[in-house]
Figure 1 (tube, rainbow, N blue to C red):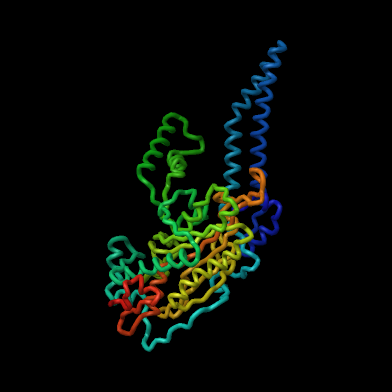
Figure 2 (cartoon, rainbow, N blue to C red):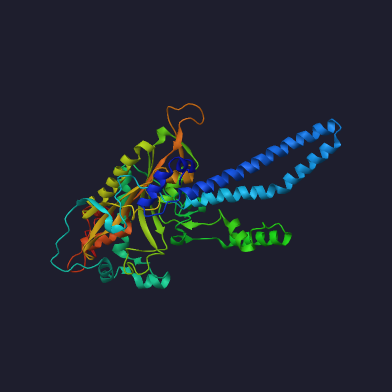
Length: 466
């Protein structure tokens, strides 16, 4: 989220950054919103100052015996009080108008990010491993899993609908083994602290990492009916008493009262992990903070109609090991390279061929300044598919969360305070890692070899089925 003061001082740079994302310039509109906000705040402040001043003048006039002046001043104060609700509403509206506009603006790409329109303009920067040469036609993961009788999409659809799967036996264990292996690697060798976070978060947490408001349709909302009922009854009560705000009907007021009471299923552990530092001032000595979590994640895949309808590539529920770093501003780009290397190590130890690409301006995420994608080779599809995405966000999320740091050399309560930088990455997506293992380690008889690094997590099992 942007600081409007920075936009005012750097309007041309701001609009140029938007142009690189293929977006129209809006600095003029934003500054007009800010002018309206300033005017509304100023009008309310002047009214308050005049009310206070007039109240004092009333006492002086009465003391001097000037009844006419006292009555005139009382009338002026009464008028100010009468106009006060309208002034407050104007201030609220102007502030909300600017805040809502700023909340919908994506982060500005770093200068080094390549320009482009979509994924076709991403730039490959590295490649690791050689794809295996098969002496038979390799199958896709769902063909392998269903052939083993251990991957069941039909039963999952009966239970939950499309884009769910039931994994059984060796495949369920393989999924667990992958997650444990990744968490052990990141905690024991890469210095990340393991965290077990909530899977349900509130509006503010989703706003802080920029899933809300723009990507609301991609999220799963889990609202308690009791909360809705309480909010609705309160709105009806206000309507009956005539205290309902003039610009609200019962339905709108119910929604307003529900703010802060909604729960969202996390789309990634980035949300709770990053929000661990919200509304905090960290000492510089605490940074960098490096955290990892293995969690189920939930996405509506609202824009994925017709894409990857078979298999585990694009599911509503999936397991992922997430990496999050909180750093000083000057350290975030170096941390980005480090985080990406940690994700790469997972694929290297699994001996899965992959390539590393830097996303172009038209394909990068809303909150990102720069993103590396790791794409693993899937022989069943005959192409590379994303398995990890590592992004540096600068202070974009920190501003939304009010997450700050205090420099170690600063003195005084507010000196040397700035916004931290945040980073997040998949370390890696467990479901997609299982897809890659199945396809890269498949055998002609339909069985699957277990990667060497996973065998200790599989009780020494070397092949599925055993």
